[in-house]
Length: 531
Image (tube, rainbow, N blue to C red; front, top):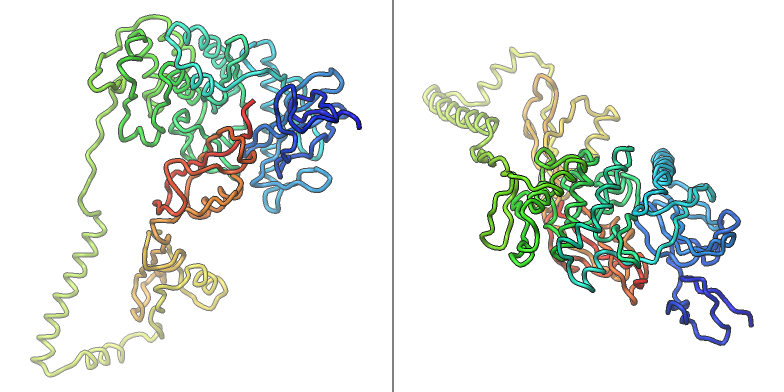
């Protein structure tokens, strides 16, 4: 029986040996991830595909073997699972309705890769050896480096002191400044994408198109909790060099303190960086000031370029305000004070209330007058209808509790001549999502002059139950959660038991928990065994 190759390190495994590679220890009995290319697929007539090492909303990274140069490489495949599918011949096709988005993002993927390949001479940037198109998608070949993530390095070895961190992060700061000057924003700098090489230097990896670095696109976003800037949590947020500054500051803080800042949206309520006095004592005051300035939550207060940040890290400044009260750094520079919230009722509520009170008063007065004059409301109505125009033949229909989609279809089909104006979508524990909570005018009342009925539509209950994980992949569970109005964040974690791409657990929650609509849910996703 012939020898076979390990799908992780591509060393020979003797035929008589078991499935464990004697060189790297990888268990070759493990099946390939379901979305990935099969083992030993040949690309560009030279690259032999091994195990899928990681995947996200943009694509899949494989261990691979360059049969031409006889060396291990990494191959990145553009395969956005939320808008595309793989056929039996391994080709990647856009799902129906997503053709334009797929084409646009594929172009972004190729252009980004070409730009990063221009950084080949920068030793701290992952090197791209080749870019090619095949299977109706694109592939990028990266030089393989034996590394571990900064997160795992700090976990195993403890946090760095200032001199160590300054020494290894200075080239990263320089490279990021150069990249952004060339129009390349990483937008995913974190303890996962900054990796430690065998000689103790750092390497920038994890380049992805901007569409997965912020919420609100058809792709499944990948944000690193604590290292992602506030603007990445907004569909309309503008991400650029200033976003990389935040990610760099958060990653440096992790190296120094072994912890990341709180997630950016939470820091809007408490912007302090909770760093212990023990760690603060090792960091020069000017470096603390620079670190805090790089981690300002709001863009307008954050240092905006790596050139400016470099100057702050290299020279002591007078902007440092020492404020160590409870093991925390207060925001620097001081943030603008929050404006008090207007807790009064909105003007339109006062207007409606005034109208209702006036109407009630008029009814009471009319009732007294009618009693004294021996007339009824029917008599008054008959008096007016006999002289008024008969243009209104029917009152407003009763729409409460019914589907807004169905009513809009009836109006669009011509069955009704009035117009519907949805002025608000509100949560309701009694009215199902998509059904009408209130309408104005009410049922039976005459139509207004503009013939428009104003309605408020239910968004469903404000609290939603988290489903069971049950071995679901990140893609499957993300789709379910997004349909229920949650914002999904992915956090990678190595696992020897859970398959690559499958969800290990919820972070901070458990299946069955009742969570508010619109909440951010972090899913811990398996990256397979750690190298």
